Image 1 (tube, helix red, strand yellow):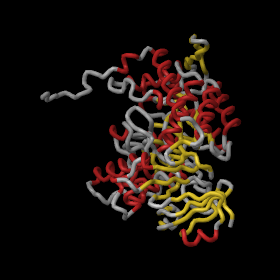
Image 2 (tube, one colour):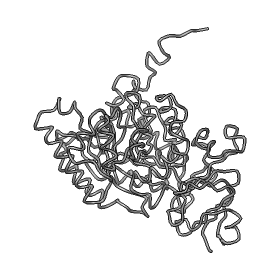
Image 3 (tube, rainbow, N blue to C red):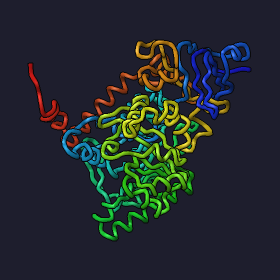
Image 4 (spheres, rainbow, N blue to C red):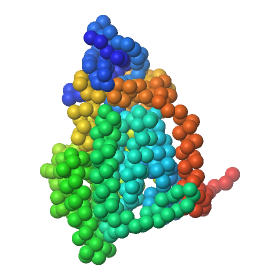
Length: 481
């Protein structure tokens, strides 16, 4: 058998249906896909490879998958996060008023580089954030994001959609240092999303996928909106959902909690292609609705929402639902390191149930590999190390003090590893991180461009004071020496 690459040695955690763990294993890759997974002894003599990668003393896993994060956030890390809702306000202002395509390009490269170095090969990125704000006034912003991701070498599921009614919303663009504002309608945003889907969905060997989004409708929206505006929002949500269904796109919503799943069901938004994030404090009937409709859940255990309430991920999985892990990264206070979020998820639910056996270690890994692939409707392509699947492969170095002694490799991987233990990352059969160095891009240039764009953004919104330490930074009590 001929192959482009043979990864030899190490402990292979396949995440296949049998959940095989192969000690001293091997994976053969050819033309972007896995062509064999077996023991090293079996494949060493059967495979003639152009290149051999020595994975001795490593764990070899499928590329990790992050089912919920935000494009844009990597350049607004921590800014104003200590002052009430200031960080959310900054996001809304930046994403409508102070983020030209150059911003989205720089941010995409930075966020993709972070993911790459942490072994995250596929990530959902909502093109904006806050409660409702998406940068869908013009397709150029999504194009800039996609270009940045492609340069780094990872995969992105770019979620786009309109802002919540009422419309129009005021957006701004920056040309030659001058700010120009203009109103943006729902119809214009939908036209933008259609253009983005036409141009980018399932392109570049599946590395770019497009998803559709409409903001969550909760009790406070019906209470605070005029009846006409709320009715318009309901109709718009159904329009976006139908567009996603017609085009075969994932439909996602950010921020479900306490009754909003009922509303989504009444509007016909649930189903196998729907991915709902956060889902805190759901009622029992909502848990049942999620399972009955095969709606997928993005659980973000490190997010602020998981402080304000609890996502009943354990109960939903017990009911038969697919629950995958998201980072909700990269801001205000969390990274894209999915090892951190696996560990957080286990402690989060074990603390609630006061039971250390809740959320087994292997299940946590499943939630950001094959389970996450199911959540995105892509389990036939990614999420496990199986013959025929795209070769998204990560190696993790176990020769580290916090990952020793050399036994129980899968336990050490999930419970003790962090993203900085990743050594090599292959995406679609192409090595894009090798010996901890990005192959396709200049990391220093990415960091420099991100710094420039962040400084310009801060200047545009006059947020210099939001970079200062707040009065309560050190806490209410101090015991000086």
